[in-house]
Length: 268
Image 1 (cartoon, rainbow, N blue to C red):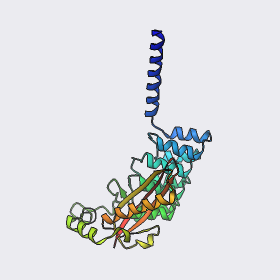
Image 2 (cartoon, rainbow, N blue to C red):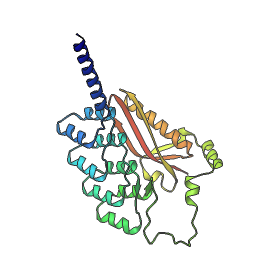
Image 3 (cartoon, rainbow, N blue to C red):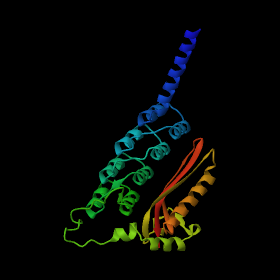
Image 4 (cartoon, one colour):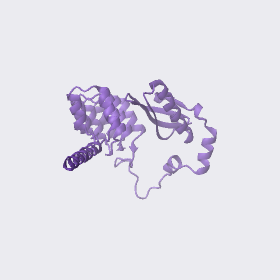
């Protein structure tokens, strides 16, 4: 009897350890591709991503492999949210993705979610044009040439060692306490304009990137989007911004429905 009890106890411990080990495993591109090849529904794949610890390869080559495996843009966007890319993206990555027929929407998503250092001098723009990179993508590169790093300048544009630096970064990215207070006191979040049209922010001062999300178990998409937009507006107002140029707008229909928004805020 005692032997049987010990055996049962050891078996229970084995099952527990095995389940914990499995739960700690990271979901990777390989599993997503395997699920897709096995014709598992998109909703189930999204639910699996939402409930798992994820470590995806979302480099340029990783995205190309996912496209070859017929992974939908919707699933890839969920992968971006679950496992943000860490590598630094360059012009060559943009060209490589464009030549591989990655959708413009997904390419913009990749830019917004990935640290990048783009070269946007005249010579580089000509090369992007020759590679047939979408104009909307090029415009995004021009408006946001660096994220999580230092902008890359062409040799012709690099300042000389004797040149006097202009304190542009100080005034735009590190405002004084008094200027922040002034902005916050004059901008109401209800008045912040959220738009998809670049023309509406053209000529305004770029403040920085912001994001917001709303999530609820089986929540309605419309209500979650309204909540996320309100959060986005409040974040913009706290920075003294009057406009938000929306760059990403995704909905992940899992048991915990999630609306995620991202954009660049501007002020008059």
